[in-house]
Image 1 (cartoon, rainbow, N blue to C red):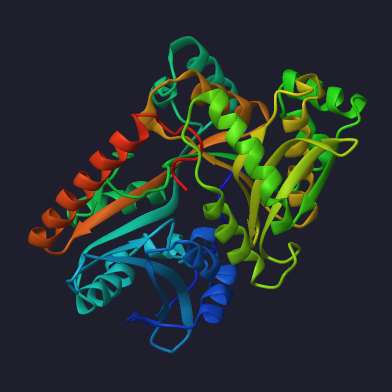
Image 2 (cartoon, rainbow, N blue to C red; image 1 turned 180 degrees about the horizontal axis):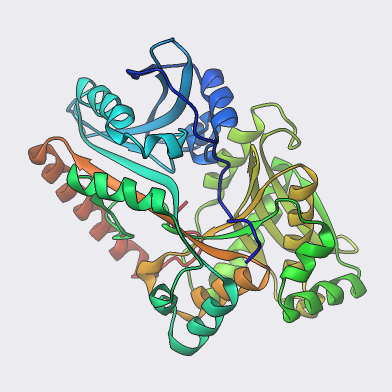
Length: 413
């Protein structure tokens, strides 16, 4: 692990906030401005909201007594058919000064709960983007290889964040229930793989990789692999490679339309892939033959790898390694502080493709970062139970349709 603790999103230093706090709707532009200032996930952006068909989106701002906007969040709401009751969800958010929030969570979260009640939400789900623990990559890798996918969680953590412990204790006392990857509702992973980019040169990043990764980067250079970043026009190539990977690793691929909406939602912000909010397809090719492709999203100082695919053709060229290495260098050059490999769906067990994917990320120099993660506050038990039954029925139908084929590829997104 590097000397600094990796984090998937920048956080602010503790600052004085004039209370009491209030929450009210704000514009999409105001939300982005605040998220970039305070620090937040791409999952809290207007672009992500546009990409989530079937969810109503609302941007909220936190205001202190002086009228200053001190936080922002995206609420995705799903309504029970023919009723006005809704399920409210803030994935990896909101963007708040969480070091300050932990000192008095009620002051920050009670106004959100009041807003949810006023808008007839029967439950509120929130992904708390606070680092809980961090494990060094080498002990994790050894433990996974020797004892299985999640055995590393029994190891002592290199970092144990007291701010997270304070926040978790308050959440427990106030009936915010922890949620895992139970498959019942949408959710994001609690365990992420993060490469800390802060203050590190290309040489230092390369040194942070394991020997096999460095060897593969050199093989790619000798094989003439070139990497380029393209816009929505890279969709067809990306999806073809992604589907090939799905067939090879036995997971159910998402349809092309899903990625089309996502890429165009971020592209519509007009940054042409170079701004603080952008999505690009990275392609690794040899003489124009694309061997690997991946969808990347940048938000503020975090650069995230979402989905990828590769072909069996010319595997010795190590195109996937070259692609990730170039993206990592681009992220550092753009001033990003974190390269986010995203997480892994722990509900799937230690299947070979899933374990291999984790080891691939660790080999690139990522540490495993555990977040406080998702919690749910039930506001109306009656409507919550009705919603759970409806979702369970829907999942049962989907499982039959999919013939029980499990998705091991970024199941959180």
